[in-house]
Figure 1 (cartoon, rainbow, N blue to C red):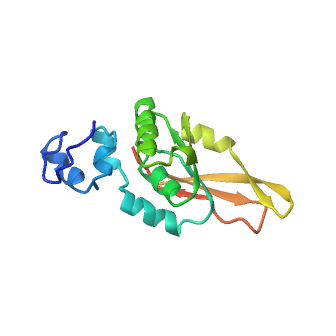
Figure 2 (tube, rainbow, N blue to C red; figure 1 turned 90 degrees about the vertical axis):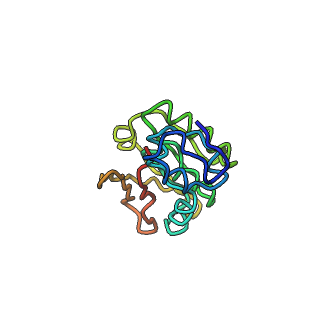
Length: 164
């Protein structure tokens, strides 16, 4: 569902979610969202700020939901792998990424991130050769942190919040 462009328009999901509708920018009001996605959405202002202070050029958004964080990271110039278990929300994220013009910077994966991320290996060029770096997965309070081991040059590549 998309929203009225009027900032004082009633929220299509009811009065309890009105404050979440009111925080959306004009462009965010054109996003496809359901009630749960609206409630959990990381708005672009916050997503861009988070992207600016997150090291690395490649990000895994392990619970991408409707795409708020993934879109912010992509808008900040990072390559994003966005994983979502809910197929309908993943389609919302694809639509929303296209709306913001960053769909080409995001790889969307439909699946269980806690199973998929444990098999990821990060490949990063170092000098003239590619260095294969194994990743350790840690889950912390609805987020997943992947830290790279085996190379001193590497900084943490993922710290992401949870969009539902």
